[in-house]
Image (cartoon, rainbow, N blue to C red; front, side, top):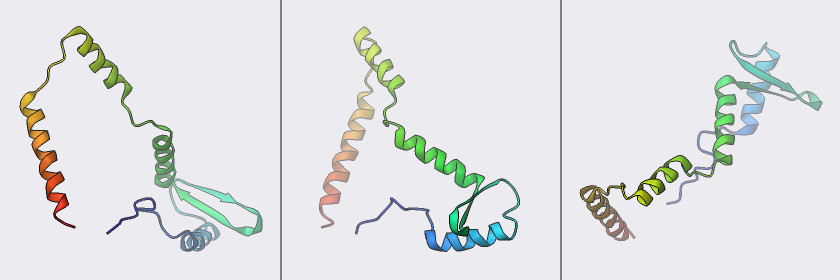
Length: 108
């Protein structure tokens, strides 16, 4: 079963547009909100939480997903010979990976 996470947490735009129009016509929401009017009388009202979420989403889209500071630190430790490997943790993670891999193959 496939799950679409691209629109997770987002509401139907046509329903939101109608409720947003009512909120703007009734003076908007109390608290921090931004309203934008467009040609044709349509308006959109975003709460501060929605604005913050939009900013975080934009930041995530522009991010490479790599913690470069951590990569540089580990590279330096490897080059200097001070990087320590926790063999117990490595073995545990490998065993868990294999368990997940082979358990997942039996479901189909």
